[in-house]
Amino acid sequence: MIRKSLLTVAVVFPLIGALAWAQQAPDKTGDAAKPAAGAPAKARAKPRGRLPAFYARVVSGDQREKIYAIQQSYEPKIADLQAQLKALTDKRDAEIEAVLTADQKTKVQQLATDAKAKRAARSGKGDTAAADATAAADGDSSQAPADDAAKSKAASTTKP
Image (cartoon, rainbow, N blue to C red; front, top):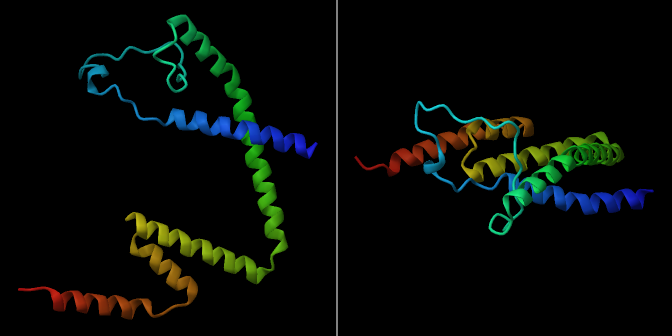
């Protein structure tokens, strides 16, 4: 039973990923396809799907509509499998965490917080609040003197 579930997940998950990636592909139609300012936008009766890669150039309009219908028929099933996968993953993670001691849980949480702060700093989205929170969680009081030293160094290298 578990093998069958895992096999199903192993087959469906890449399909879900491919569909999610296709949904996020940027629109290359440009501004020419957008209605003029002030002109009412034409509303569709129902949302359409996205064709798989390279299908747009080879399918007819009738085939296109059939593909959209197939996609819509599978959407609830895929959403259900995604929910099942999330529930199973959450259950697994809870069981794994239950193996750890309280000290280990604290350490894992701290490592996760540190990694998140590093990612934020690397991506340029980080602010000093994340670093301050990490330093406070560590009980590190050296954060303020380091900031003062950095400021004085920056001031000394600035030319008038």
